Length: 132
Image (cartoon, rainbow, N blue to C red; front, side, top):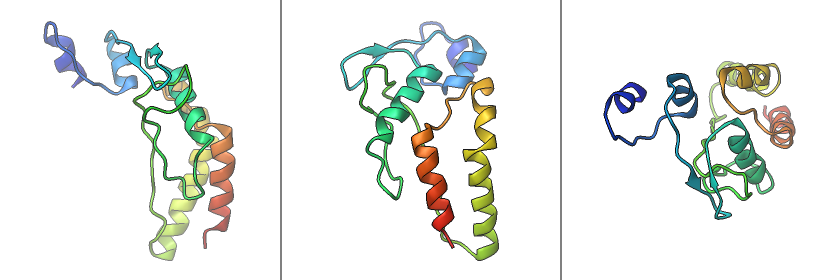
C-alpha cells in the first residue's frame, strides 16, 4: 500500500505509521477528540494509549480511536488476545504476552512503534498472574 500511495500522483491513503515513516511518505494532520490537529508519531500514539488507559476496564476491551487528550492521535490500534484455549497453548500465550509487556517493550521505539503505557502494563501483568 505504501508503494502504491507513493507512486500515485495526488493520492491519499492510510498506511500504517512505521511503513509510512520508512517509506518517507508525507503525513497529514488529523483532528482528534479535543479538536486539535495532530500528526501520527510515537508520541501522539502514546498519548492516545495514555488517554485510553485511564478508562481501561478489567478485561482490557477498549478502543484507542478518538482517545481523550490534546496530543492524542485519533486513529490508533490495540491488540486483544483470547485466553481460552488448551492449557499448553494458554501457557505459551501467557509467556509471549509477559515477554511483550516486559522485555519486548524495549524493541518498540527503535522499530517505530509506541510502547504500552506503564499503567496498562501493570494491569495486564496482574491479569496474567490471575490466569490459570
